[in-house]
Amino acid sequence: MNQLTVALLQLTSGGNDQDANKAKGELFCRRAQAMGADIAL
Image (cartoon, rainbow, N blue to C red):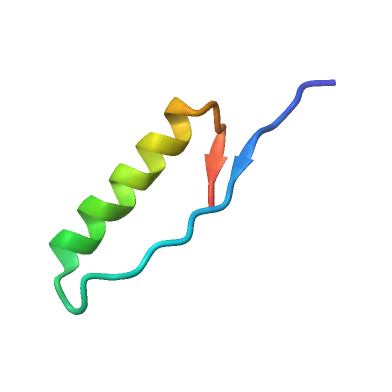
């Protein structure tokens, strides 16, 4: 059976700045991937 590694992300938003929020979310997802996560929630 294959193993699935899940990352649970917790971050604060940058208010109503959607571009900043998207960039921060992507950064956190990339960090999780670098740590071996297969999926980030």
